Amino acid sequence: VTTAGACAGEYVITRTFTATDACGNATSATQTITIIDTTAPEFTSIPADFTAECSDELSLEDATATDNCGSVEISIEESSTNETDCPQAYILTRVFTATDLCGNSTSATQTITIIDTTAPEFTLFPEDSNTQCEEAPYSIEASDNCGSVVIEETRDTLSSDDCGNYTHLVSVTATDECGN
Image (spheres, rainbow, N blue to C red):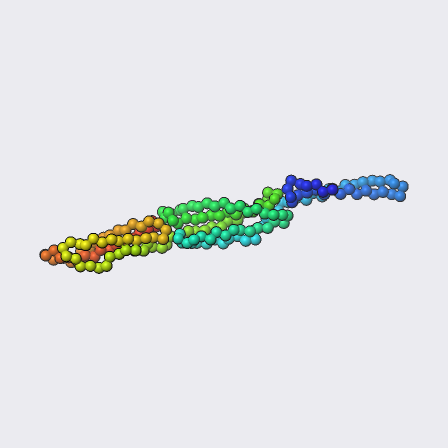
């Protein structure tokens, strides 16, 4: 007789043996075999750790696992931490937990490091110019792959004369939120 256990991988087999002689005398003995599942699933593949630029599209792969007694369910818990002053740089931790039908489980972790190492780019920048009396207005614009940009301008006078003529050097720096 087979009796189901607490989960699909567990059951009890009860075997009854009866010995009978030629005169009909009988005696019985019972054997009980208890099948339990205490073995956790095993991962057959776990996504590798990697580092990506903040503007990269992340390809988040799944893990796979097998069990010796039945099917496996894999859950994923994701969390992120930022240990820098850069809002676009963080560590994404993905914990995969494989659980079989009897509640046995095992876990594996994937770590994805997101970085921002790409400097902003100027999208609009004036050319060198000579102007009469007043400086002509100009526009400067820059963009970043992951966030906002601060543009700073400094001016250094290289030469001037008594008539009011001067030459100056305008230096422009575009900096993103991560200091690039």
